[in-house]
Amino acid sequence: MEMPRPGPQHAALQAFTGIWQGTERMPPSQWVPEESSADGRVVNRPGPGGFSVIQDYVQSSGGAVRFEGHGIFTWDAAANEYCFYWMDSIGGPMEQFRGNVQGKTWTFVSTHPQGQMRSIWTFEAPERYRHEMATSTDGENWAVMMTGEYRKVGA
Image 1 (cartoon, rainbow, N blue to C red):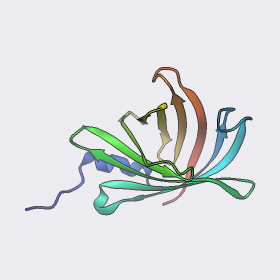
Image 2 (image 1 turned 45 degrees about the vertical axis):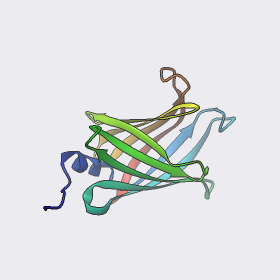
Image 3 (image 1 turned 90 degrees about the horizontal axis):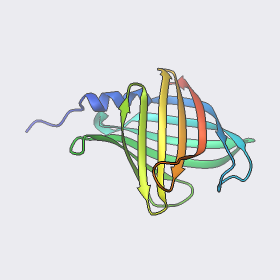
């Protein structure tokens, strides 16, 4: 039996690979009472066999780490959609986002008992992307909780 090989959907995920740094803005919300900003650092590397991209994320402000997370991007051929698995320093269970790519924009949505969370990455160039996180209780009205602009600073 021949071993599976990554397909074009796996290859598309490689757009995320690299070391990225950016500035993030958080509007007032249930998490932060006043608008704030932070620095974001993302290290994305190819996963085993090229079937995924593994992400390590650190958000800091004033030289101190505020928040950390770990994610995995992959392709679910049976469902014909991308998956993003996420866990972070808030300590909740691992969250599963599902979505797809249209043009240069990757949109993933996670559904949980409190509603939905949406994560959108828009690649403005191979070395630059915007990221937005938003929440919704009904899947139609979204409250932005973070926006960030990142530049690739390493492979």
